[in-house]
Length: 411
Image 1 (cartoon, rainbow, N blue to C red):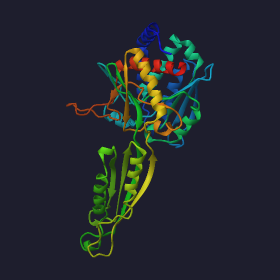
Image 2: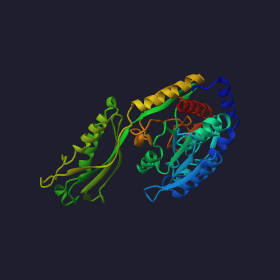
Image 3: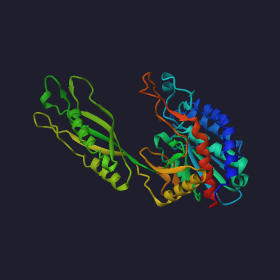
Image 4: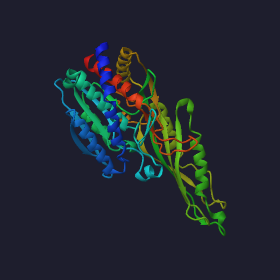
């Protein structure tokens, strides 16, 4: 089903009229620090979100995250009169600790079309787009709103990659026509990008065992673990292959204790990302092949350093697939009805889509347009700027998503 011109106009008018209220709700969300480890703040945001959607008839259930240090996942549901079911996915947490927000004077700040603040685009703005959609459907297309069961799931700890939320999604979204994820998405004029694939990630810990000795009187007896780690890191760095979209990032490094001791231990953590399962597995294999690697020995020849590689986490890629492409096609048809264009995007960062795409159709990037996700610093020369969303993107994004949802449930 496509929307007639009068319905499109009525939806747009409703969205534009209520945009100041929607942005004020976003301001209230942004003013709550919801850093992942700030469980109380995450839960305060969850309560505010539940109260907002209760006005539309949604009931709220909180589910404790598997990690007791984190807050509660939030499930919002409004039951419909038919078997039609659509799922929306967002998250409550951000990456900014309270002291970082204070140190960098990072708060709600509106300058022209840009609204700066923690979570404005990643992903509190996305939650507001969902609210705008539901309110517009209730007002303009009440039959659609009342017939469909709407389920909104908000992750308490998405930024840490918690996998228990993926399991929750699969339970709650069984039988949905689509799983719609509201991470920020690019929009330029009438051209929109929708995410249809994301890189997978693997995290490794690499440890080097060397041999300690006195740096002055027994230097030749020591096998320097840091020197060995330096060689290992160069080899890992060399595994990056941009032609295959395979990247390795040396994220942290530690080693040694005091300056007058040949260090006996060093460690580093590595992040790997890849789009396809084949490239992903080849990258994992290349890392594991470094086990027992050794190029540094003590000068007296009695001890050789050795390397141990451990896989700490595996999140496989969300690959392009028929179910996602079919869902994308619905949004492309809806965009055409509005005079818009929708293009597919394959994105390097993870989202909850990585955990659920094999079981249900998923698209992502349905939230507002913006930039500088995960950035809180600001410099006078403009080389550093804080996270922001574009106020002008909320109405077009909500309108496109309403048109897409209507086509989905009516088609």
